[in-house]
Length: 400
Image 1 (cartoon, rainbow, N blue to C red):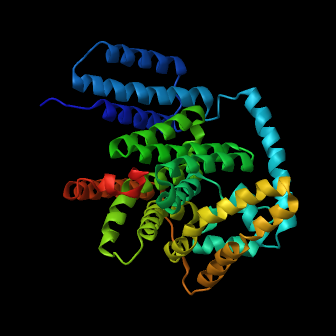
Image 2: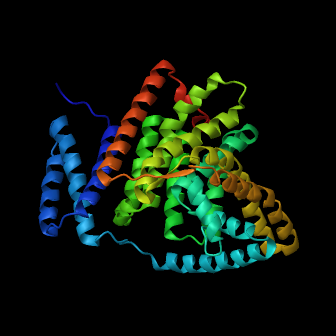
Image 3: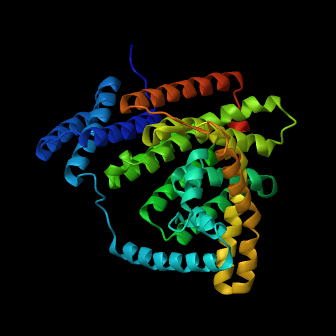
């Protein structure tokens, strides 16, 4: 029986094989010329018009060997650096330092440090005890800028804005990402986060599940192609897991919550997105930090819905404080109650007995669990989609 693979599936397979090649390339050493000859052979086979099965194998091998070759050539380091971009980034870093100083002058502690951590990923002056409390309750991602954090912020912003702005909410979310990059000084971690968050917005805007996954994998592969070593960084892995959860698992949870009509739609959607991201990232967090926060789902549900509002106040306030300092200081203080809410939630939940427990996962177990979760999520998504054919259309992310 012949194998029928759509162009969309071939695209997905290519980028997955490329990422796999990069991962394997980090563990073995192979002569670059040998890899180039093998790549040339498979490419010739690919373009020679073979049967579908042979073509599919050629795509997989070409991408996989290409990934091996890229790692051998680069050693995992970033290989594309534009001088003019580095000059821009240097200017933005100076701009970020100026903003940080203005926020510290405008707000008391620890609220000022917390706001700079949320906006800029700057945790230098954040109280050590508060930082540890964030780790205990599963909120440390708030001050570690990543695609995980930025993706949740953008989709929650759309949940709050779409009832008033409709489709235009997606453009405001893109503007939020751009403003976030500028304010933060555009370090590489935030640029990667912006790419992943933008990929999520584009995927959900198109509203087609298969295309959404392709865009996610393309964004991950594109970033890994230019800086191969990021596939082993926790921020990148969390970005992939959370973005996948928002595209695939969140629609199923949101549909399940429709049986509770007393819960406002916007709140149902935020709950779905928060739970989905928390579940998919849990194995990765356990593997890296060897602990599991039992209160993390609750703390995130209590805090994440207000983050788009806080971000909006912070961005507007920092812009104003540079133009009209007195007015900007007043605008920033509007965020004080929200910052206080985050601090109080953290202290109260962190003080509970057994809020966090020791846990560990070896690499092989983490990989198996994540793969198993992806298989389960795909089964759930496809099963519910057959029962409710318009699940992806009805889900708010696909209607923006």
